[in-house]
Amino acid sequence: MIVLANIVIAVVALLHLGFLALEMFFWNHPFGRKRFGMTPEYSQASASLAANQGLYNGFLAAGLIWGLITGEFSIKVFFLICVIIAGIFGAFTARRSILYIQALPALLGLILLYLSR
Image (spheres, helix red, strand yellow):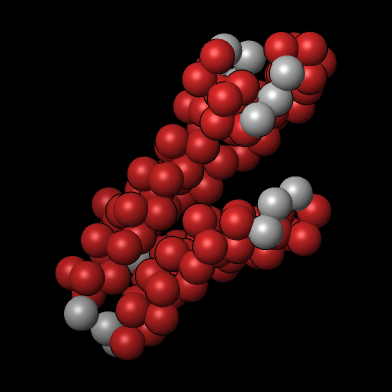
């Protein structure tokens, strides 16, 4: 069960590295604008906010990777809960799909992590 939990946690970390790349490096490029349905003007005006958000997603990924490397249960739990909270907040303030893309995989990882104990 711990192997499955760690696989899901690794997927969550990879998702957050992808969010980092989208928000920090591709926000103001055709790929990012298409992905988020933005005009060039809007992406230009909001690029610094998106980069800041991407950095936070990178910190979440780093924490999850840290937990995977050390094997520390509490580190994994803390960062999974952070991801779940961020996903719930994002679902209420930005897009409902964030709940399924971000929070749900982290919740699955958290459940599997607790079942592996």
